[in-house]
Image 1 (cartoon, one colour):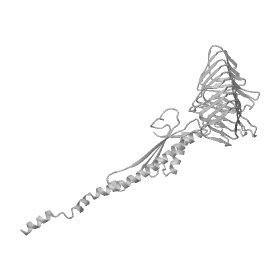
Image 2 (cartoon, rainbow, N blue to C red):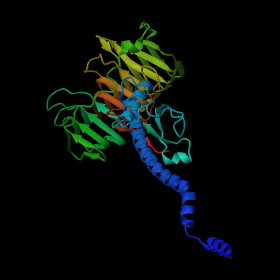
Image 3 (cartoon, rainbow, N blue to C red):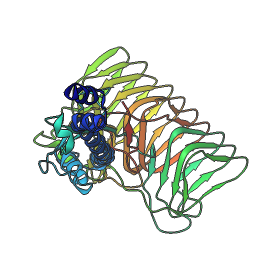
Image 4 (cartoon, one colour):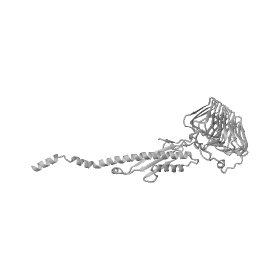
Amino acid sequence: MIFQQFFTRFGEDDSGVSAILVGLCLAAILGAAGLAVDVGLWYADRRAAQGAADAAAYSAAVDYANSSSPSVAFSTASAKAVAAKYGFVDGTGGVAVTVNSPPKNGSYTSGTYNAFEVIITKSESLFLSSLFLKSASVSARAVSVPSSSGQYCMEILNSTPGASNVNFTASNGDTINMPNCGIADNGPGSCAINMSGGATLSVKNLAVVGNYCTSNGATVSVSGMQNIGSAATPNPYSNLSVATVEGSMSMSCSQTGASYSGGSHTLSPGVYCNGLGVYNSASVTLNPGVYYVVGGSFSIQGSSVTGSGVTIILTGSASSYATANIANNATLTLTAPTSGPTAGVAIWADGAGPTSNTSALAGGATMNITGALYFPTQTVSFSNGASNTSTCTQLIAYDVNLSGGGSLSNKSCVTAGAKPIGGAATTLDVE
């Protein structure tokens, strides 16, 4: 009877049950708490890795776009150096920093974007979460895309000292419209940009070492950055040299005084001495390559010239450096090469020539240029209804003059190979 009562009371006694249950569940409770702590640490590492990836990708793209000799290898090293400053050293402490150009995934895997993808992975330490996991890692990815347009579509290089230096003029109803870029003027004059006679200048950005002035109904409108009294803007093509581009090619004349009148013609790259002329409704197609016009004039009158992957170099000697003369409702349509020593440059006037030379677009002539017009020692003149209609043209000249209803428009320039004026408008892209 006594034993029966004892076992009955023992079976009904529930004291200590909670302790037993806690003991049985303790491993799971501690594991969950440890996992929560670990996940918090991983989340902090993930945020830090993303910041490092963003900075590294941006730095790689900026270095590539702003370099006179862009190199994926140099930009890759730059990206890894930036990531290291954030504490993510490639190959150390379970960290891997991978730089891809073009990116392996996303919107920029092909094409001519020069985009950079940075992927940072880091092996994570396991504390109490090791009860459930064998390994863990965090990963962050960023893609940066450099714009080849830079901040400006036009640059005027004439920096002759003195308040009277006027190196950009527009008058008589001329229009300049650059909604997505602008003008950089290195002239120190108090009226370096002189707008008069109802001319209109509408740009996103404007930088003038000196200042601009308006008169007789002319207007200047700047929607973005305006910098009066700015530092001079570097010339992105200053390292170009005709001798370097020429390489082993002989400068002996392919043709002398070449002239094409009426009909259709196809030309090949070469050396055209004493000018190259196209007249009287002729239609000329230029095969891809570099055309040297040595002395004389590259002249198109009442005709059309078309070429893709083409650079025209206006060069010469001390007695005569070639200029361009496009007039009488002529049409010139050129797309610059996307690779090689003249990448991004459609027409280039040899910088060894005198600053007294002028290349003119006049008389209803139209240019549709994809790439750069580079005239470092020449004045470029638009007059009498002449215009440039392309949305992707850079103009870099010693001086620029517009008169008599000339017009110059540009929306942006995303031509592969073209060098940005005033630095690259690099952006991080979220994919």
